[in-house]
Structures are given as C-alpha cells and as structure tokens.
Length: 448
Image 1 (cartoon, helix red, strand yellow):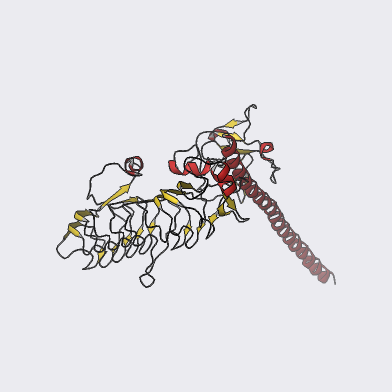
Image 2 (cartoon, rainbow, N blue to C red):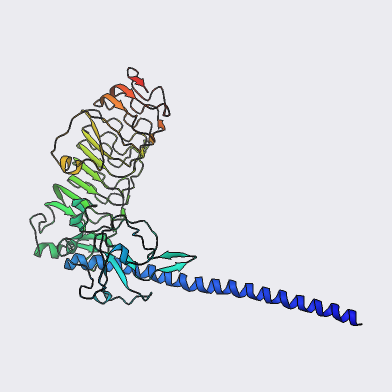
C-alpha cells in the first residue's frame, strides 16, 4: 500500500510540473502577441498620422511658402544624429535638417501620441519615438519614396509649376469627388485671365495640370471629355506625377507642341489626334502602354511632327513611336532596361541621335526644350539596358555609323530585325549578347 501511494504522488508532481511549464509557455505566447498587437496598432496609427501630416504639410507649403514647423523651442530642429538611437533616413533625398511639425497648424490630433519631424528638403515625416516590433525599430513605415520636395533639386524644374500655382491654375478647373478634372471653370477664367490663359478658353498657349486642388486634395486624373471646349494653341502641356490616369481620348486633337508628362497610367489613345506634338518629355513614373499592329495603335504612333523624345522611365512600350518619321533625337535615361518591339519602327527621314542622360551630364538644360546643340548622329545606349525588342529601330535609315554595345553589361538580347534597314556600318557587342542574323544590316561588321 505504501509503495502504491508513493507512485501516485510521483505522478501527481510530474503532472503539476508539466502544467506549470505549459502555463508559462502559454503566458509567454499571449504576452508576446498582446505586446506585438499593441505595437502593431501603434504602427498602424503612426502610418495614418504620417500620411495625413505629409499631405497637409505639402498643401500648407504650397499655400504659405513655409513648412508648418516650430521655430522657438530648443527641440524644434534636429540632425540625423539627434533623431534617436537606430535612426536612419529612409528617403535618399533627405537633407541634413529635421524640423518638429506643429500639428496645431495642420489641425491634426495624432492617433499615435508622439512628436513628428519633417525633413526640410524631402518633406519626409518621421516619429520621435520609434515603435519596436520583433526587435526592429520603426521611425516610419518602410515604403517607396516618390514624394516631391518643392525646394529639392531632384525633380524637374518644369514640374514645380504644377505645385506652386494653386492660387491661380488649380482654380481654373472643375473637379469630381475622386479628384479628377472634369472641365474648365469658365466663370473663373473669364474673370481672372492671365497672359497664357484666355477668358474664352479657346486660345490658351499653355495648359498646366495642377497637382493640388484648391481644397488641398491631390489632383488624380483627367476625365475623358474634360477639355472638349478647350484649345491649346500650338502650346505647352504639363502633367505632374500626381496624375494616376489619363483615359482614352482625354486630350484628343489638342494642338500641343511641347509635352511634359509624368502621369502614371496613360491609356493608349490619350493623345490621339495630337498631331502637332514636336517634343516629348516622359518622366520616370510613366507606364507606357503597348500598342498593336492589328489595331494600328501606339502611344505616339505616326505623329510625324515629333522631333525630340526624352524618356526617363525604365521601359518603352510597343509601337510607342512607330512611324514618327521626322524623329531627330532620342534621350534615354541610364536606368532604361527594355525597348519593346517596334518601339521606333519606321522612323525613316532624319539623321537620328540617341543620347544617354546620366548624372555626369546636363542634358536637360542643353537640349530641352527646343534648341541646344549636340553632335548629330551619335548613337549610345544605357549601361543597364537588358533587351532590345524585335524591329525596335527597323528601317530607321537615319541611324548610321558605329554602334558600341560593349558598355551595356546587362544586355542579353537583341531581337530579330532590331536594327535591320538602318545605315549602321559597324557593331561592337559583348559575346554574352544573343542576337539574330537579321538584327543588323547584312552589310554591317559585327565584332566583340
């Protein structure tokens, strides 16, 4: 009997021990998830605060010309080293100074109760007290930075006008609840005419699409028939990066001569009938749509007045400039990776110059807009270029001389008929590049 009791006691102690261990594990897990849940909630609150602060701070700056920050207290300005342990500027465009945001000026009550600092060059917002999640410190959510800093040098000069003209330009248009321009406010235009904008809207020499509405909300797009009663008299059109959509035919038939555009999503017929365009500058946000042979489409296809094209994006759509028979100069961003099939197909008439826009040159002021000087017939391609599509430069007879691809270390493919029909006489190419027997003229010399 005594032995049996002893065994039962042993089993009871083992059970108690296991129970205590399980409870400790469960408590640890619950504590971990509760703690992380609290931090995640703070993180989401911080994200919402930062979005609201950056939006309203930009509007405040546009309207008043200064940032909504404190200037009097000792903690109002910080450098990177002052921002806190583990702080790293996430925006490559950040300058050296961070200023404390005066939330009262913006009418914001923060969801995450801390102080917020804004970089005075990039307008990027960070929190003073970082949130720790799984041993990682967050001074703001990690994300892609494409915000424009009005006083920074990293945006094109032309685009600033879309932001700093809220008192004039933004009031000339009508908007819907989604932030799309729906038309012209003829009453405002007739009472507040400017040299470039005439009261009857039929003889404008310039159209600048604003980035910000009078309400402070961003302008996100252009409705399909917004400019049905507007003429742009052989003038300039500027479209900022805030524009998320240019729908089919929204600018149909407008007399545009110089086009500056950084809109994200452009429909294939957005510029249909804009046959007077001579110079085109496409920013890095442009997602160029592919055209097709069967529908005879391409973003600027068969626009025979186009002479100069500036492309800052990383790809060029199919048939984008096919049939632009008077093409003279193409400037490509050094980050360009792909030139699609038939991109510059049948640009037949002139001696074509292809230049690469790198940090070491100042092509923007030298060649854009009209004017400037350059060595005609120069042919160069971006170092990061990976592929040139089929018939990309087919029958571009003005392309001549020697083409050197040896600096294009990422290039792997030059497709069939890419340069067939050109006047290229010699090609230097790396042995790692695959090309077709028809990629170059049959008379061209090809060597590694």
